Amino acid sequence: MEKSLNPEDLFQNSKAIEEDLLKVLANSRAKTVTATAGGGMVTATINLEMQIVSLKIEKEVINPDDAEMLQDLVVSAVNEGLNQAQKLFTRELSEVTLKNFPRP
Image (cartoon, rainbow, N blue to C red; front, top):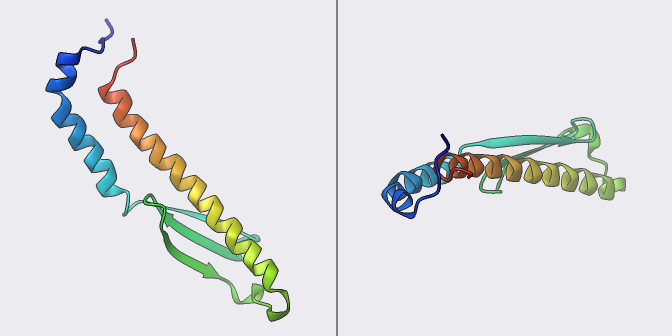
């Protein structure tokens, strides 16, 4: 038998829901994703607060005569990392939602 969304149950469970959401938010700084560009020449690590935690650039890709290529690689790695972080954060919030708000 499926649970239905009952306002009284929701009210009674509000503290547990709040705790679950706060746990996801508290862990978002510690959880990271890593993305690369240029075959690993640029690596960006992003936390789930959408902050760049680290950016690694291999020496071989640093060319003063082609700064635009390096800029493109950095943008690519950071954007991919942000995309991965957003997906992971959304998945974690969805788990809280599905746990606490059953589908009819």
